[in-house]
Image (cartoon, rainbow, N blue to C red):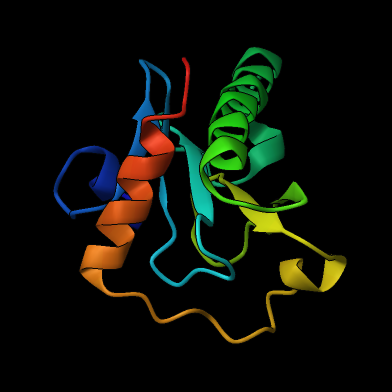
Length: 132
């Protein structure tokens, strides 16, 4: 059965898309830790990130770097934090989170409650800054 991320990639579930190419897809987390919190996934459905081939894993990291640089230009922050947890959805993914301190990357923190309009505005702002 396809993961929720596969359904997002296929357009079966709406998302706030940031960027995509032939192999990878980036979209806003709808329950973000910080404004601009983005998920980056391979289009090929693979549960565990370290089950990706070396080529696919390195491609995912390089694609994530391009997205992170776009986030950094669009959202004021000290850095872009990166996290791979891999337990919540059975589809390999990377969290890119704008942070100003290490505590901003704590998944126990309360999630932001953003409206659809706010998420659309953030996605547009970031996507305009991503250079693929």
